[in-house]
Amino acid sequence: MKHNSMTSEIKIPLRALNESMIKDLKEKYPEAEISVELHQDRNKAPLSESAFWEIISMLDWSKAGDDEAVVEPAKAMLASGAVRHIFEFADLLSEKLYALDGLKYALQIGEDSWYPDQYFSVDNFLYARCCVVANGKEAYDEVLNDPAQMPKDLTFEELLYIPSEAYERKTGKRYDYTPSYPIETYSNQIGWAEETE
Image (cartoon, rainbow, N blue to C red):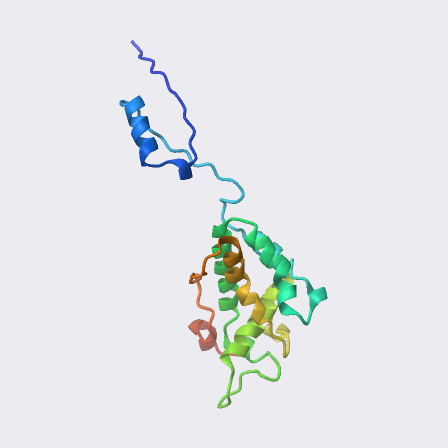
């Protein structure tokens, strides 16, 4: 003989589930089992590579000369989404900057290029790498595959501040997040160990 048990479904947003609600449920349904079903929406899905480049494409180069104004649309777009997307954006940005951290790129940045036994500005090279990412996916891929395409004597430091400023705008809290990849110059040891052709 098959026993049919009646199933009731109660939907509660996870953020609303607190101790007193759990207590009420236990009293009302002492023999009940609970199953949790997580619904993913666009804001909960991870920030995709294409969404990252979409945000980068919002940089408004008609405002060139005022770097804060250039990044404003991208910052606003990032701040309007889920908080986790801000961290994921920072992770993807760090990954791109790390990939460009290498001698073959440092040799191609113009007047401030790396030369043996000469002063080399690690910050300037980081900002030069930012410039590559700020120019969008096509330019980034081109430089990644051909270091000679590095922009010459151009930097874009402001790109680094998009995640922290978007986070502070969204939450009103201080941004304290370490992205997946180190972005400081010389972090990518393999990139600096490679022989140049």
